Image: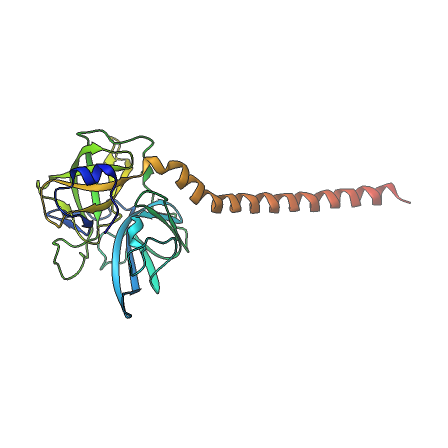
Length: 282
């Protein structure tokens, strides 16, 4: 169970639970929404011993970083944690059909949890540079705005396994809270809705030039399919945290580059001075 903000508690029509794949959505076109990510977690511990496998959805926001739902990384007793929980966590990006070979796979090496919002950032062991990341919104969504969602979850609440093909649907924005936004299915159907394993899937606006701008990620909602709202975690309110979390790696690269450059400069300066001394003679 994911903790809800006051907005979600006030308007949730039924008991909420983490969301899965998109029910009554539609197949994404080949190569579309390449920033969409699937997280495959193998060997998750369960209460009483043993393990299970699970999946979440997400989005590439930088070459080494994927954003997803915070509750995708939790202990057997349901506590969100800032670390990997499964024996193995793999991230697939840019692969519309999971049975194909397009796109990329990378391992997850670290997890960073937002303090009060159901959002986590996952660091990858390999930079994915050939897939354009989704842009981050710098302001809140607007009531009535249409957003698109992508996810790799189930297509029914009791389905046997997540879909092998990226699903998508369009949603309208309802109420907007301090860190949660309410979204309701619109196309292809009024009961288009996130399902299990869609958790962390990106809600994004599509700009006229085709640019996708991330607004929120799937957090919680009723069982699927259903009419009425689900609740997603706003990402614009996390802009500073995202920048601080994803920035150090780039900072290390910049520092290393500067250090290497300074080293080369010192070597060149030493050579120049040595040549001048030899020319000057004893």
